[in-house]
Each structure stands twice: as structure tokens, then as C-alpha cells.
Length: 222
Image 1 (tube, rainbow, N blue to C red):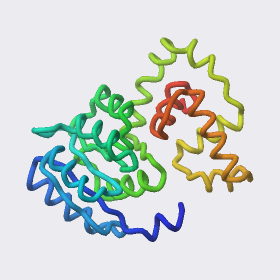
Image 2: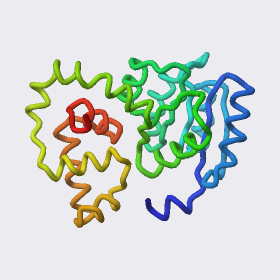
Image 3: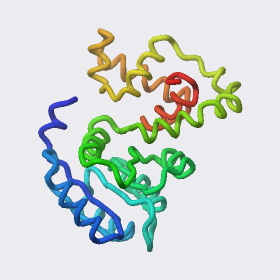
Image 4: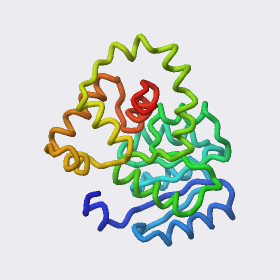
């Protein structure tokens, strides 16, 4: 973990239409040691208005909201604020929604009954490492493995990865930073960065969340 990330106080915005839940979440997030500012919105449209004035580091977005739901909100955030990290909150463990949100570019997914310490961990992880894949996401990806392997095996077979590339992908999926991977493998940060970029290009993915999804669907993390 980089020390710049540790020292910086994060700006976190929260969007949820349930007032009591939102205010309780806001108070909880404000108590997190690395969070310096928290703002809230009732829906995606309000959130985007807030972001026009000052972009946050991380947004926590409810999937089901009136006026503008979480899906449309995240699509617009990725388009207009690509550096902002997105944590999606949902009441339902819907495989279809989670996989779609991964494709859009969301960085983490949490059930709304998650424990406070996991929310705190997720906020830090998406800021430091670009993603946070918990047991909720892993279980959904694992459900997809067999069907995906069966239907797309010819595609995956065409993607040739070296042993070093596979090792770097697996360590990335364990949420190690580039520097931590470099130290573990006794190579330079530049080497790790180049290998990871090469794998992402071969796999046709553009985010680390997409890389994690590829790792599970191709069997690297099976």
C-alpha cells in the first residue's frame, strides 16, 4: 500500500433514497479514519450535481433509486468522472446486475447488510487498488465459471499467457499492489506494470475489475 494513499483524507459521496439509512451510513463513513469529507444525495441526479462542483475520490451508490437509478448513475460517472471509484450497494445478490455493473466499470459491490468494517475496507481498497472483490462477488463469478468455460473455451484458449503473467494476475486478484507484487516476485514495479498491461490488452479488458472477472472466467482463479 502506498503511503500517499494512507496520508490523504478521502472525499466520499453517498447516494441512497432512504433517508434514515443514508444518514446512518453517512455518520458511519465519517467515522472511518481515512475519510475526511462525506456528502450525501437522495438519487443519482443529485449525486452528479454534487460531483460537478467537486469530484470525490469514492462514491457509494445504491443500485435501486428513483429519478436516476444506480445503473444509469454509474454509467454517467464512468463517462464523466473516470477517476472516481465506485462502490455499489444492493439488497439483492443478483448475478445479472453485478456482472453488468462490472462491465460498466464499478469497482466494488456490497450487500446493504454488510458489516461496517467491510464497507471501510472496500472504500480503501477501491481507492488504493482500483477494486475490491469480496466473497459476494467471488461467489457470483464462480457460479459463472463452468458455463463460461464451456461456451467460451475456444476464445480463452487463444489467449496465451506466460507463467509470469498468470502469476501476476493471480496476485492482482489477491489485491496486492504493483509494488507488493514486485517485491514478492523480486522484479521492478515497471516489469509488473508492463506484464499486467499486456494481459489486459490480450484479454480485451480496460479495468482491474475486468481483469479479475477475466481471471475467474478463464479458470486462472478456479
